[in-house]
Length: 316
Image 1 (cartoon, rainbow, N blue to C red):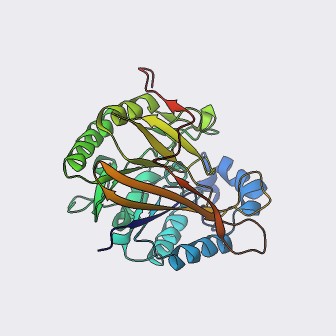
Image 2: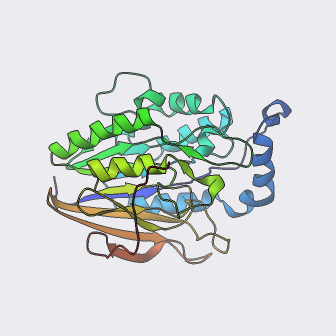
Image 3: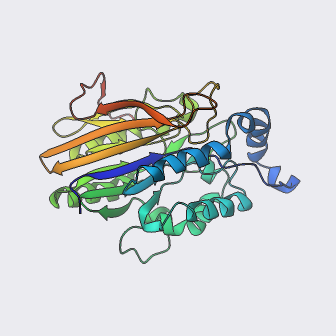
């Protein structure tokens, strides 16, 4: 095994087009999402762009691919099945790790269906139980890297896109972080909603930010990756000794020329050992309508000063 581990990260795929939808399926929060798709998202999110980003990832031979949620739009049964077929094209499920987003749990009951249909990509090492809310966070160890998948996905009210991080999951996350720290692993926490207050508007926020940040402050992690904002962002939250980078990514299917940055993906290069890790981030993506993906920026995450570090408070 080579010394360097390469991890690819994408998010907010929003696979389309929408399948046929019945009036019964629209008699819910889905009617809001359906109108948004017709007015906005179908014009800016393109499967051809998703294919271009995936091809670029494969060309760079990442060791593992992480997807931090929102594979679909309205969590229709046909969408969830279409997403499963798309996941199968990415490689062996052992090489692809998924956490669900709010669109994957768009209405009551959708989260359970997502877990069942996408189970091979959300199952921890050695886990025998069916994937459910109780199996998150899950743990996958690849080389010196511990991939810890947290869920923030839950159905929310119309016009809301909030996420949730509650005490039961926090307790399980503490144990996994301690265990993988004691094994000398590089710990990466995957979550859909950004666990920082400045990242998204109030109606899209994570409920439980303070709880999440206290877990990281007391138990540590080397990296947190997320989606949801559709932005190539970099924040920091306080760890036991030093700030922990929190990295977002542009939406995988976003066309150039929209309000949000065009499609990108993150490549993390991890080297070293506990106490002497090196972590580089390279962002690659589209810069124009007719140009192939290219390198946008490279950041040494452990040597770049943290412009702002959020500190956990008692308020969630």
